[in-house]
Image 1 (cartoon, helix red, strand yellow):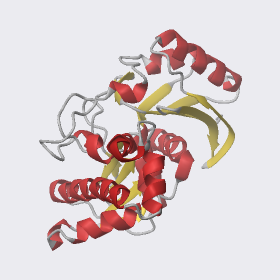
Image 2 (cartoon, one colour):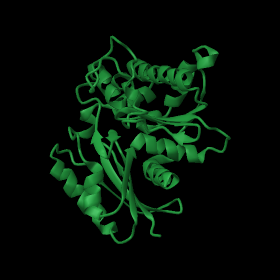
Image 3 (spheres, one colour):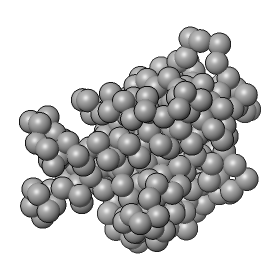
Image 4 (tube, one colour):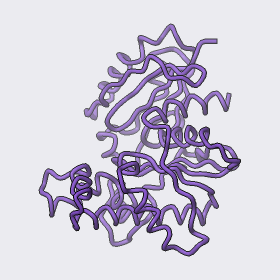
Length: 291
């Protein structure tokens, strides 16, 4: 049997690699097209995937957005460059003529992180704080996908009913307060219109009080989210990832805010360990696990 081709589609990049016996080889990566024209995404996928045609038997895809019956949609279309209702599974099956399986990228990363745990643990969550906020959840040793593929979209749970309007059009979502995008937006009054999350973290490292308050507000929203997940799902561990989640000093702030909660809400938090290949490794493992 030939190995599996894994694809990881994010808001800024598309990565592809052959996964064989848990190893990642022949990895390639391109920028996600910024166009809202589906034909542009079709062309990028065809150029990226066709060279693997003869080498694999099936395709496992981890993608940003909600994946429902192989169709990519989004609660926050801005995170997809406006591309929405895209028939991702059928497009890839047309290109490669191979069985194709698609789940959300945070769900795939959660499954990858779960495989690394040495403890006898059945219930955990992976939370990514990056351009947006998302999660994958494992309960009773199984990845939770949901009937409509929505499970884990915790960035669109409520953090502050008086907060900013989220890209999903709801007011006060976690993503609108805690994400890298939100951090950059909050920094504009202090650091200029070109401010982004990276600039705020630079000032945070320099102990700028405004930056410290912005990053602390983000971390507090994530800590409250973790406490909510503990109450709803009784998870035992959270792996925190993403460019914000793994930024120096961030996880310590989340842990600090969570420690202020009553004891039943507290939970172990650790940094995610699978890195940039988490989606690729996780989705390939999940497909084979379910086949």
